[in-house]
Image (cartoon, rainbow, N blue to C red):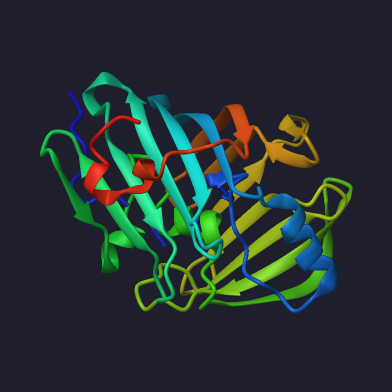
Amino acid sequence: MSRPRAHLSARVFVLLLSASVSAADLPTIDDPAIQACIDKMMPAKSMTQQLTLRSYDESGLIEESVATLYWSRAAEGSKSRAVIRLSAPASRKGLAVLMVESDSLEPTMYLYIPDLRRTRRVTGRQLATSMMSTDLSYEEFQHFQQAATNSATKRIADQTIGGSPTYVLETLPAGEHSAYSRILTFVDQARCVPVQTQFFGANGDLNKELLATPEEIKQIGDRYIPHHVVMHDRKKNTRTELIMENVAIDVDLSEAIFSANRLGMAP
């Protein structure tokens, strides 16, 4: 029976896992077109969704997990919080990750491990490790959820992806423990939704790539939400699928969901 990794992986979904991908916060950018797109894609106050995560290697499916994602702005409206809580498999039910946006280079992140019945901080080099045994690290989760404001992000030349024009954002991670030298995010100009994210290592090689399935980008209200994305680890030749269901935007969420002291308690 598999056991939760005590060193599970943060340094982002939206813009998925993000968050998930659809819940991500991008930084403020001094470009009217980009900023308008960012403002359009972000929920006004909150979002919930069910996530199915399927991890594959060259032999096929190796694990399937089911989780619920909760995302919310803090009361003052300037900080975001995100929680992912596993409900399956049974061996890891209750495992939870909390991210709270901060003014430092790295957000405050906590991991609750049911077997140990305790919550621990995720810091430093732990940020580059695997989150919940998937191809996503804590660092990537952080990027999807907020693309840290202390990273250098700028718009570079637009590109066409799958026949659709995209804005291209280049992020240079600022944290000393970052596994990446550069991150490129491609945002569909018409729907204001990220369709591709590339993570480059210190040597400039493409390490990982997150792709949204075009036909699974669905409109909810006045926003478009990716419902199926795949994180490819180009070095290990593995991948993790994220399937988003039961997406609800701007619902009322209890503040207790985002408390590190209550992370081990079901909402």
